[in-house]
Length: 511
Image (cartoon, rainbow, N blue to C red; front, side, top):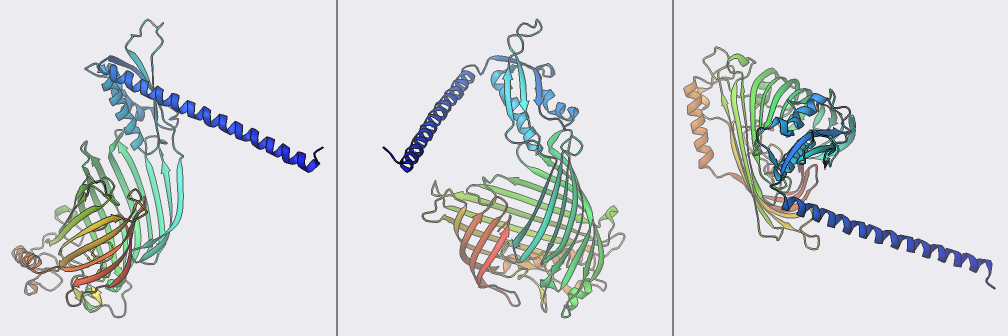
């Protein structure tokens, strides 16, 4: 006769056997269901493929679960699907494509959970008004929550900060969004912003954005702190071919304050208040497969700004333009990629108001070059004109680089982790011909500015660029790209600040 302990053991073994049997039966059931689903999808695909030219009439479109979204907002998206609103009849293939496009449009508003499901059904055939070709479309779109609040910390590019971010979605039932952001950090000591974003005419590719902000940033490379307060408004538009355009106006009060004891005379001359009133345009054509770690494709981007010209007023006047390009070339399916990038920019002084003299640029508006996100192997703002310890920036620059990205052995090409070998360089100059400068921080006539620009550009092209090379490790996180590099400056001019050794960079744009 078995002892009580043996009985317990036998009972546990029996229970375990029963559980294993239940698990085995569940696995078999899931496997059968999976096979049935695959066969069902295959039959559906074959049915659609065999009937692509079948005439179809979309008699109704209903969006389910979108309780907080305005009916008029949704009607602008789905009404064009109805056959009654079309001049030409549908085929089954055309109807499915149009329904897919409308679903994709709903998804891009960012107020619905993904994925959005679509169901097709035949109307009641006993209804005398229905036709054998009629189809009812049901779109199941569950709305996301009203708000999201995130807090966290960030580190990189010689800066660390803590932030809180709040987002209110679908505020008025038309995919309107309000974003509030606040952060405190080591370099950007404080930053606050409040932005309102709304699609126009229920079009996710046409948006209006209004933004107000205030920030205080320590610019240790130029011995001062910059305080900004202002706002901007933007019209954002995306074409069917993927080109993005932004047209905007900004009004910003700027203050250069908290000068260091050893601040240079050039920085002290620009200290104080200024007000910039400007129009901007940004164009982006991004065909890269994965922007943070592209393996194929290209990017072309331009940013143009005109300030203080004509009715814009303000107390600074200039035309400023930057252009950027990048291309990624894969080596078959090896995971090895060669990327190359080129950037350039110019700041052209203009006359302010009724003055006949063009203004010299201010340190607030000039370009800065150098650092782990631009020219690796050099300190932040380490290139270009300097006055004592301060980097003054420049009015014209060019920068370029190439990187060879290789998968890490035993890690695999599927992971977002790569070894990197790179070379990059650039040249940053201020406008020459100082004999034409007048008192009060201005140039002479427009001819003087044009001659100065031509001389500076000739120097930019003729001289050898500052350059560095190195190797490193790259990790592309969904939010940002992280790099750890060992860099060695190859060409460096007097007073420029190189950085031999390890550097760490975090960002979404790298040269």
